[in-house]
Image 1 (cartoon, rainbow, N blue to C red):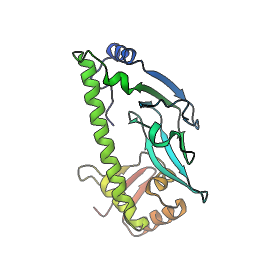
Image 2: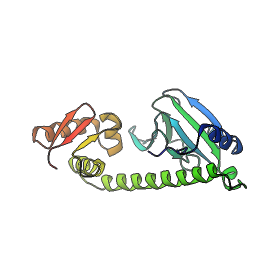
Image 3: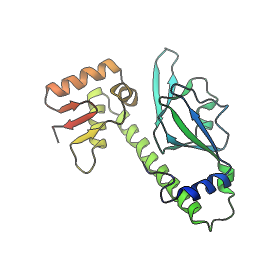
Length: 209
């Protein structure tokens, strides 16, 4: 993931965050991010950590809606903060910078190179995020667990490589794929037995490519 402060030195980064009246908050593991922390018309930059947005269904099941990793940017206020079905949970200790979009839009000295660099980085990150959402939508259209897994493997391998490093646990992968965790474990076992994949911790080797 691209660093939103790429090519901005520490001195200019501090200047930028001060000019934008940003707030930095550190959350512990398992903390919930509520509307008390999320400001209307603001974005968050996840400097470090891992956040999940979970939807709790009426039948008691939890579904992973979105996850955010280091250097992700997000807008949670309008989508989730006032809906009781959703929980925004820090799965690791997380450091977040909140920036008021009004300050970002109304910044009146666009001759500052570090500001222009920051905006460019944000746009690149947003573009990557949209690609990731489209990838997940494509995965979720697959009917079976096997086909969702294979689609995930195919879209996660870079430049024709047959090696994938999972960014999270198999439990989190089941949530990402929208499938039962036990059923996912069985399907991975079958794929290993049938010679489709090898699994070494979070390293997946695709034998069929």
